[in-house]
Amino acid sequence: MRILLAEDNPDQLEPMQRALEREHHIVDPAKDGTTADWLLATNTYDLFIFDWMLPGISGLDLCRRYRQSGGTAPVLILTARGSLKDRVTGLDTGADDYLVKPVSLIELLARVRALGRRLPQWQGDVITLADVTLYVSSLELERSGDRIKLSKREFQLLEYLLRHPHQVLTHTQLERALWAAGAEPESNALSKLVRRLRRRLEGLGVHTWIETVYGMGYRLSVPELYG
Image: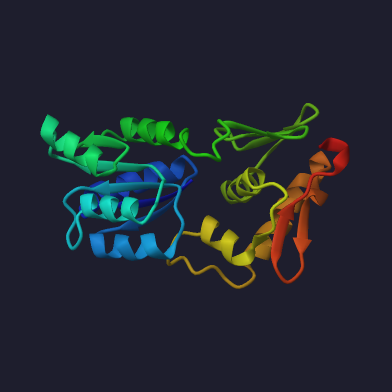
């Protein structure tokens, strides 16, 4: 998932970011509400984690603005304010969940997994298309009993393609989905990643499924034989 994580304390932000990235998520960190608001308006996210008391714009106000704009992605609020009244206020503002500080990374990851299951595109920890199965937790791809191990970046690209089969995905869409804000990938980074993934998929005989749509981007096309 692509996650916007807004937390002003670096001693808490950095461990949370590392933990989420170890779970193969793409994380855009923000240390204040103004930066988080700009990122929210600039990118598309699957999930938001906002600290309540952010400088500039509070996490609660970010959540409220996002809901008022019609946004539907899950929002998790982090705060040291753990009273029943505060929890009710956060949930009534539009948050989907509420986690009291100090944050346990194990609980944070569990909450993120639970919220991820609410997404329309969620297909579980095992994604299957035709006779190919991608195991999210182990980064393995299986077909007809044969398995290959993908790198983290190869996995992120293939997962995104599998969740959007038969759709033409532009270079901009893919770059925004796969690279964190400010990463500024090289101009040929995406094409190099696609070539690398195709080579990895040759072992299962499905490298031709990734179709280049010239002038636009890429599409995961499954032959009718397997549809």
